[in-house]
Image (cartoon, rainbow, N blue to C red):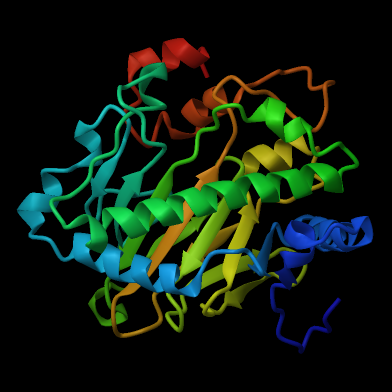
Length: 322
């Protein structure tokens, strides 16, 4: 543990021994590092994740391409008009209870690509902007697929960290809910006093895989023991991982859901991209079979977002009253 006058830093964990090695001791070393970081911070950083640096750079260009579209064209793709909550979220549309001002950010959402709307909107087709595929859809979709696979790997490591077999993740995630949110923050100079890029919050659900545009700092994580915010620098080829409320609850508090916020600290615009890997709509706690409440991923999602967004009656009927 750091002394009070020492700056805290989130650990950076190399995942490659877990992903590539055939030796169990190599895998066990990674499992232990992830378990300890998830218990202490609820957050950690990773290298050796298998996502090419060039793809990360192409993603930044793709995000700029969609966010640079005319406002009218972006609003025509509003996620509020879409049954699957895919598409564009304009700046000022996200305002948490207790925050003095709405978030200073704009977003674009995608998810698993399905031909038709299913499961009351948990699944369905994406909205793709009128941009050449090479400049948006191709890099965005490839990044989605790779972070979706990475999310399953992180879940598996967390399950093994609690002494459970890795195979549990397959039963928990036959068709997981995995949305991805691309985000652009305005320059620091254009934000009002007291306004955050994203106000302090914990994530709702499972594992979050976060890409930060290199050298564009802004993420901060709250450390309960020190009662201070830890700055998380935006490093090239380093992703940030965190656990959500669902994991904290289902692990009996063994893993922590860390409070975090974003303050764009640069004069230019800042990009990030978060993939949220939750599990199947009707899946229950994979860590233990003794969870008396038997709450599902879908029900917990509706419970969290029912007051923040207008949740369709069909979705509530699918998962039950929350």
